[in-house]
Image (cartoon, rainbow, N blue to C red; front, side, top):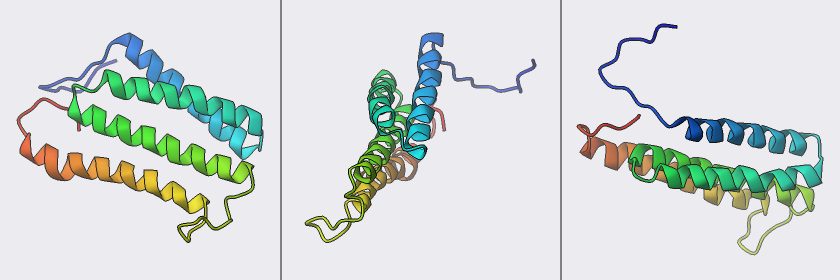
Length: 135
């Protein structure tokens, strides 16, 4: 298979790629179990999905673009898992002390993920154009 010509390439160790691919498998099992209302399986799958996400973010901490994207994924999984659990325990539509539903509290980590990416794309990346980073 031919690769497109490029002056710069980005590669990661095979061990990292295997972990990232396994992470996708766990994430899909979690969301499929949520969809099928297999509560015990969905909640159990949060653990490896979230842990691997944190490990991936930690391993990429020296590459700002990767770190920011991986942190955004980690908070996305956290928000998604919190939302799932609120549905499972039947409080998703109840009002929290903040005056919004418990389900809508998941917006906090979702927004945090967007803020992390906004920091990268709007502040960090324009100031470091010459650094070899992924987009």
